[in-house]
Amino acid sequence: MKIYYFSNSIIPSNQANTVHVMKMCNALSGLVNGVILYGRQGEVNFSNKHVKQQYDVDGDFEIVRINQKFTRKTGNLQYLYTLNKIMKDPEKDDVFYGRDLFSLFMLRNKGISIFYEAHAFPFSKLRVNMERKLVKSPNFKKLIVISESLKKKYIREFPNLTDEDISVLHDGADITEIEVNAKFKDNNFNVGYVGSLYPGKGMEIILELSKIIPDVKFHIIGGSVKEIKDWKDKITNQSNIIFYGQVPFDQTESYRQAMDVLIAPYSNKVYSKGNQEITQWMSPLKLFEYMASQKPIIASDIPVIREVLNKDNSFLCHPNNLDCWKDNINLIKNKSEENIEKKVRNAYVDLVDNYTWSARAVKLKRILDFVVGKV
Image 1 (tube, rainbow, N blue to C red):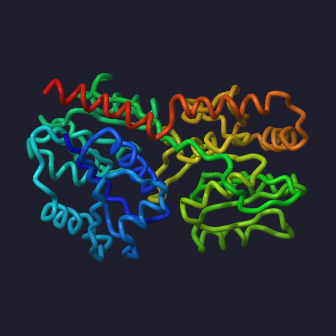
Image 2: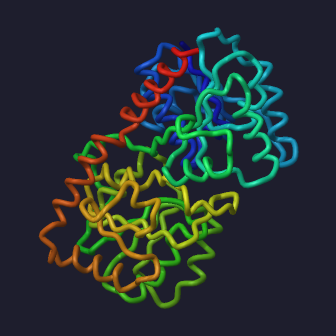
Image 3: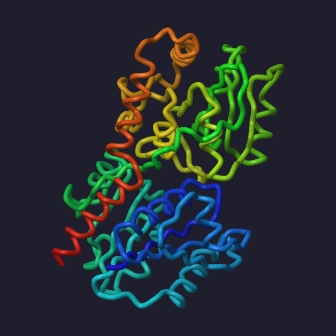
C-alpha cells in the first residue's frame, strides 16, 4: 500500500499546515513503504533534502512540489490541472489521503480508497457541497478530524455520516531534545508566545497583560511584518513586549527553551488566515509543542482546549479573566505553587503517551489497514 498525501500546502512556508503535513508524512514513512506528499512550490526552490532539514525530518518519503505562479481566481484549477498530469498511477490497494478537498474531490472516481482529513468545518456553500459529494462517493472510506468538537459538528450537519465514519486524531509534536540551546539567556522572567498573530490567537490578551505586569518580558515569536507593525502601533510607553517575527521551524524550540512559561491566550473567538472562525474545533500545534518543551503552560479555558489540557497538566484561565492570567504568571514567577513541576511532567507524559507525530501516524495506519482491509 502506498499513501498519496494531497496537501495543497506551500512547501516550505511558515504556516502550521506545512509543519503538519511534513511531520505526518515523515512519521508515516516509518510505517509504510511508499509515501508521496503533494504540495505547492514555495518562493525559493530548495531541494527536498534541504526542505526536510528545515522541518527536522529524515524519513524516506517523496515530496512532489508543483511549481506554478498561481492567481487568486485560478490557483486551484491550475494546481489540479498540473497535479492530474504529473500524478503517478496508483494501484487498487493504494490510498488517497489528505487535507486538500479539491484534490480528493477530483480523484473521487478513480477507484482508490479516499480518506479526508478536515481541520475545520467547510466555510462556504461550495465547500459544503463538495464535501457532501465526496463523502457520498463509493470510494470514500473515512473522515479524520482534529477534535471531538469538530466530529460532533460534522455528525450534526452531515446526516449521512455516522459516528463510525469519523475518527478523531488531535495534532501532535515531536519529543523534544531538552538539551537544545536556548536562544538567549537573561535575568528577566520571560513569557513566550509562539504562533500566528491572527485575531483571537492571543495578542489581545498579551497586550493587556504587558500593561499590568511591567516587570515581566513578553516574547512574541511569529507574525508578518505588517501584523507586527499594527500591534506595535498599539503599544505606548512599554518596553516589555519583544517581537521576533517569523522564524524557521527548526529554530522555534530554541526560543521556547528560553522561556520561563509558555502561554496560549486564545480569545472567545479565534480566526484563521482566511478570516474564518475556528474557536469550536481547532487543535493548535503550539499546545503540543509547548507540552514537548517541558515548560509551564498557561492556556485559555475553552472547551476545545480542554480536550488536551486540564488542571493536572497546565494552568487554565478564562480568556476575559486578566487577573487569572496575571496571578498564574506571578505564581510561576515566584514559584509559590508546589504543583508547577508536576503539571510540567504530566503535560510531557501526556504528549509522549498520546500526541507525538509517531503515535498519531500509528493510529492513522491502524485506521487505514482496518478500513482498506475490509474493502
